[in-house]
Image 1 (tube, rainbow, N blue to C red):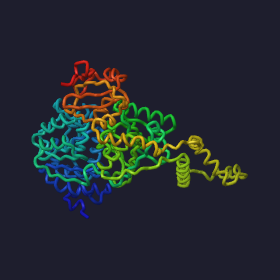
Image 2 (cartoon, helix red, strand yellow):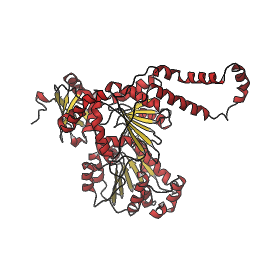
Image 3 (spheres, helix red, strand yellow):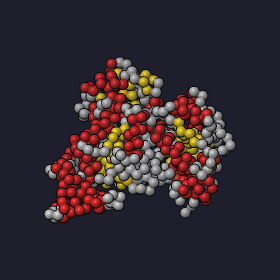
Image 4 (tube, one colour):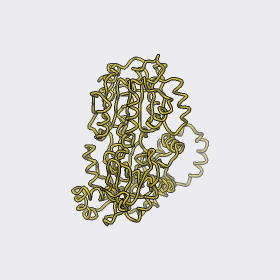
Length: 558
């Protein structure tokens, strides 16, 4: 196998990565590093999250930097604060044996004046989120004239989040760059357009199949009726007592509702969504990283850029509307060579979308039986026994208590002691699951939906209505809004946006029709006024949103 030294990595960096335990390059590193070390070729790397992309571009950047020139020579742009901090931290570790190279992270949600001071001291590599970087450019606090290398990391996520204009603005303000390196899990048309406009004959590599699932991830689904979703979620959590994972929900209202319910029932869980302040978000993420909180409930937007090691499970409380989003969700687990599980809770109406996901990730999603109450209790019991047998008793003066314990239990049989220990630990579980219902979807309940599923696959309009909820009565109100694909939205992110803004459930929506500058939304009449009140007049990226009844005249389609 090829070594990092054979790829051309210099001695100082080799010592650092060897100290970190890096022995052999991953496929993306093996293919990318020799090209990027040339420093003159534009580059596109398509690979899933967790395949070692940061080292693939980070090691060549650190090697190409001229330490004597104390000004920004390399710029790494990424979608979120969390990823920005993670990349900066990784680069600091990579250069621990390579002295006098400075990395500075700039991102929103914290003091800009302190970041300006850090930049004035001099730096070689800037890791930035788009919004904060543009703020610094407009304040003339950063000079990008001498940037030689620009890295766009998780480019597809940046475009999904509406950063297309920001990225183009940044690229226009780095006129002297020698090369642009773009890394992405997927290659939607918008990224291809950016690459054609700002890159010169890029060298392109693909590691694995684009959009393909990580081989370390086991994709599973549980089929049930809609009203049983929450109970199925609890069964999944209880059946996996060592779980450390993320539960994905569609809206901020859903995340809060799920987290509050589970917290009341004694689970270590918290929620992360767009209403949190940066301080609140940092607190939640800190608890999740140190495993004080074992489960995080998140929307897709709020989870962008979260990079936490050791996640065992990703749970799709509902399937995403855009099947590509499934790839991003599942990619949070099964990283760095570890195995992981991606679980989806689906209703009869969503089975057809599972088949789309299977085609996208080029892997089988396995149907699982929802565990019975007895299965859950058995699993929890054996987990407790294993934990008890592995308990470290070497650091306490337990022997001092043995005489009292022997006296107390002298008349009690060993079997009775074990039963009493089990009763103390499992009384709640046993009572809760004593008469637990079978939540599995029966064959006869599926039969009535098969025709509907087939119609949804055949008819684009019916499929669209099914996709975005809808009551099925055909009597929708149509709303006009002056937002469209030019604002950086695609259907799934637009759906997330309007539901987050209005705190409505997706079931009230019908078809969404998006154009470049405008969109039309079908909504149940009872919810139309609430959505207009929540969204009309608000600002999006400096532009006032206009929303009204499309049939009232202001938004009538021509």
